[in-house]
Length: 111
Length: 115
Figure 1 (spheres, rainbow over the protein chains, first blue to last red):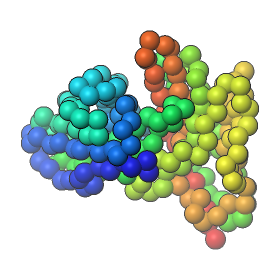
Figure 2 (figure 1 turned 30 degrees about the horizontal axis):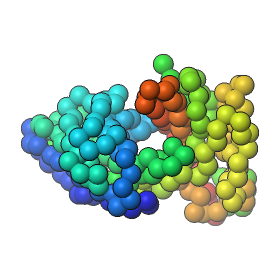
Figure 3 (figure 1 turned 90 degrees about the horizontal axis):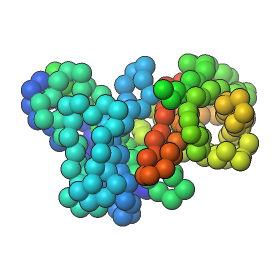
């Protein structure tokens, strides 16, 4: 699992509330990614980071923000959760040879 | 637009049988192609990764092939086991330089192996 953990693993929240998901890695990788996975879609990139305080948008970044204040942690924030953000969220790191390793996922339900 | 198409969408096979999953892609520029296995409720796990110059790669009972000319890949599973029941995702990497690196994911093939 390349030392990747995600927290929480499950969360139920209400529309309009802020939500923060955490990804933690133990192997000092530079690149970290947040994806969402929905039925009928492949994994879609939300945001990624290429270093501390260096982040960029992916294809589905609207409604999401990220922060990376230290190498090991990459946070994904939904400022005001909507039902369309109900999904499974995966964090990933990029290792040598462009290999990507994924975390166990966070299942988020927005009511 | 970069796209990865997988077929079939789902597949049911008997334990012990072989099967082949297909992946067609239109991704440019092409860097590599990966196959991932995703068990229900878990994150994807890499099975193989192939670059342009590789046309086959094995990982135990899993063998991936790549035809870069036709932009097709297949994943062959030999002597299937119940634990092979999962979704298999084809992913194509594209590196256009200047730090721009992108993965395009297929929607996956859901494989069910039954006794």
